[in-house]
Structures are given as structure tokens and as C-alpha cells.
Image (cartoon, rainbow, N blue to C red; front, side, top):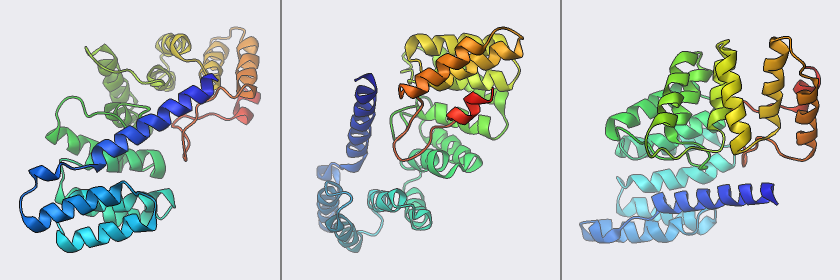
Length: 265
């Protein structure tokens, strides 16, 4: 039941976030053609993933070729189908037309789907120019966009910078902590050889939401310190069998661990 609730919540967050950025207030649009394009865009975005949706988007661009949202929405089905070349052409067009609106989505997608970490950093740092402060949530709702930026730095070898970003986020007043923030920070500290800080964050993760990978890394810290780690290792495998693991819809979570790795610890 807990696993179902977590994925149901993630799915709802994804739907809410997508619908929020998809719909446009057409009353604020000037010009007859532009207003018609806006209304057609809103209609087509409600039919996302259907053929009628893409046809509607095509008609929208005929009415107004500089409506950035339509290129962003047209790109989504290509991403889901694995056509990253067409996705990139369309999302790049959206970013060119509105560089203050779409780099966050493009950066998150590069991070989550393409593992293009350096390119993701460029997008997310660029977004910081237009939206200093809170950059909002990632597309799937699992992380803040700033934490995605930190993980991209970590994956690019800049571990200290990544840890600093996450620490500042967690200490910030009003920050909405994600489900896996302490896990990602713990791994960053582990990779830096700062085992006390790593274990501290793995323990905090266990108290908030525990899962097999987090227990595995706690056992790894114990082994490095020449302490008994076998009980934790067995608990990690047991938790895997219960299905309580780090998962994401359509892709693999950053720093995902599989049972084969746990078994050979």
C-alpha cells in the first residue's frame, strides 16, 4: 500500500505540474490570430499523446509561429517514445523563443533521460539568471530543480560543489524537501570520503523514507570502517524483496543500485 501511495502521489504531481505549465491564459494574449492560436493550443494540450493533439499544435504554429509553449508540448511525445533527436529540435526551439520559461524542463530531461549532466548544468544555471532563488520542482516532482542541478554537478565530478548546494537547500527556510534529498547528499559525502556526514544523511533518510539502496550504503559505510555490516546487507536484500526500492517512472533514478551489487558487498 505504501509503495502504491508513493507512485500514485508522484503520478499526480506529474499530472498537476504538466497541466500547470501547459495551460495559458488566453485573455492576456493580444492579437486575433495569437488569441486563436492560444485557444487552439490549450485544446490540443488537453489531448496530449493523441494524434489530434499534434495536429492541433501544427495548426497553432500556422497561426503563430513564435508561441514557445507549443514547441515544448509537441516535444513531449517524442521524448516518451525515445526519439530524442526530434525532441531536442522542438525543445531547443521552445527555449530559443522563451529562454526564461523552458530551460528547467530541458535541463531536467537531459539529466533524467539523457544523462547529459554538463549540458543540464548549463540549462539550470541559465535558468537561475531569469529566476534567482527557488527554481521550482523537477518534472516528475521527486526533486527540486536546484537539487537536480546539484546532482548534475556531482555526476560531473564536482562533489564538493554538489554537497554545498544540497546543504544550503536543506538549511533554507521554506524549502520543500524531496523524498530522496538526504540519500543523494549521503552518497555525495561517501564519494568524498566523509563517512560521518554520509552516515548522518543515510540515517536521516531512513527516518524520513527508507528503502533498500539507502540501507545498502549504510552497510557499505560500516564495511569501510571495519564494523559489522552483514546484518545491514541482509536487510537491504530483504527490503529489495519487499519492493521498497528507489524507482522512477520510465527511467532509472540517479544513484540507483541493483541487487547484484548488494550481493557482492
